[in-house]
Length: 375
Image 1 (cartoon, helix red, strand yellow):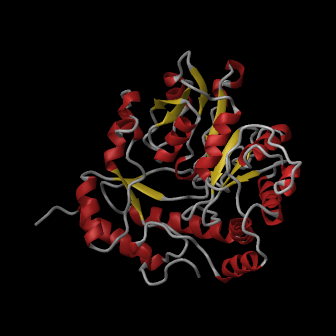
Image 2: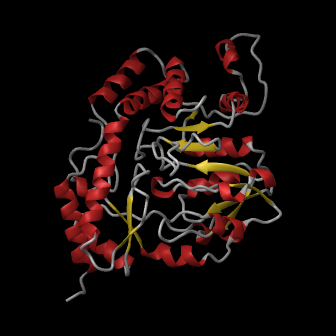
Image 3: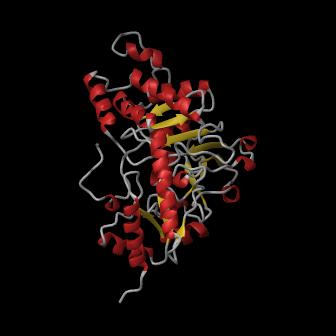
């Protein structure tokens, strides 16, 4: 197992769920000299497409790279507004800035920490060129009611948390015809150790993204890169996924249903145990349709609770400090009442497939103690 084994499960907020087969896959890829983009990557892309029920998937070396390329693919450039929740990891905002766009922050529903049609509509201006909903905790966001395509506003979905989740109509995230981006980073539901992917809207767009991720060199030209007759067809970046990482991803995907079952059972176990605590609100992920990425609660005096739980050896975290108040992005500040009221109360509890029922009890008991008045 590549995940740390000398740290108690409750002391970690998240951890990769890796076993011997991933180690074997890594060793095999290295022994074969498959260090860069290779057949292994292409097979992984097809397997991802088959799992999602889509025609094509384009892998990238990180989830942030997937977002950056997707935004470029829909034409985001200098000064274009992208409506996005402030309640997300800063990588989402950096991807907008990397494409030349500017964030137009939208408020969220405190119960889910996700944007809604209403909050997105309130943020749209004449300068809006795209909307970037974030599937917080793995929960799918549906904005079809806004008919954004009819208004020439693109949708790029940040589904970094949501691989394997479904919309309420049963379609998998990524299979709805939108431009959807996944992350396969170290703590994601499915990990390549580091990686990402884009589900394009059509095959032509997928091929353009493939060329973009290999420095503007078409796939059929890559083999000629050390000859005199290859050509660069357009703008590109070194965003391809290596065969080494794809090898890990293929093994992960093969037993992903097992991970889904573990994560879902863990979330339900937490929900049952937390129901007995007063003053604790569980962020709703629509568990019947979601592969949960994390487990987040809202509590009063969050910072004090955080300190007490850390002192008790519990690996709590915060997902996430709002971006519209961060120094890097505060020039685009706009008041977001629900985000600002909810964020100081958010607390992420340890959540990863290696945890047991005993771990859940340990965490919840520690939370109950941390919530108790001093003295």
